[in-house]
Length: 375
Image (tube, rainbow, N blue to C red; front, side, top):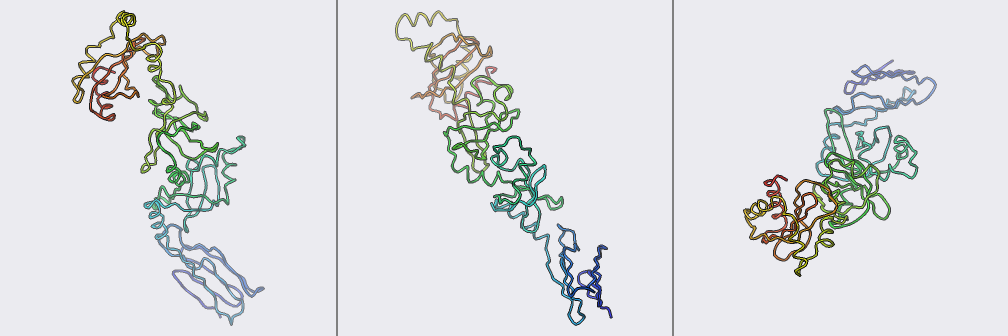
């Protein structure tokens, strides 16, 4: 005599020798227990993962002996709660460990609770993919990581699209950034380039750190750089100086330029000694007048906070890097203001500006003046 058990749309019919399981979705599995006391059905899917439905009886144990009652194991999953937990992890920026289950060409598959998440290859720490054997393909490097435990953060959750994206880089960056200080000088490897600069991964103690910073176009060289490819190439090792660290935005600003000798300051120190005697003064007077100098001086004096502008040294620079008019704020420490350098072709003119403004405010002055005089 057969009997039926019903639970949440699941129908279980069992007799002395067989049992049939089915769900409302039409999935079925039949067990024949004539030859064994116990038969076990595993992983009978009765609901779509990701939905808010609960799954009942992912595994069912059946005894062939009619005197035994049918055992129904309840392993319910509330998928809605799982997605809510994932969103909470993202909002709180929680860093946690997870084990790599699968690798494919695009990245790694891991588990977050009952959900499956994805770590794109671009979000895996660079040192894991660099490897000593550069002949390995990306898929092979990723396959090596299967079974390993990685620290991660959730960076994207879209329940309606079943997207759960994680990042190891974001997880390691937060703790690593605390060790990076403005003014640090270190080596790095160029990872990628963009129209506005290049991204460099820092190296410490001979090891890649996973910390990437931006070298803006303006910080790549003292000369103007129109395209980052003109100054660096991907995988090139470069020396950089840390010029900014934003822990909140997890951004690092780097400079290659500040580790290079300033050609203008080099000119000042070698070709333009301070004129203290008549012979030196006479040589300066023989220089041609700097183009549009009167307009530049009056534009500077018209700025709020600028008390006075005095001419400093002047010279002809043998190396002509640009015919354009350029205005630079030097790093020279001046007691009552700042020194500016004007360059047009081979001509270089030093200006001393007297002002009580701090450096950031004076930078804004230089930007406005540059715009007004057509730089």
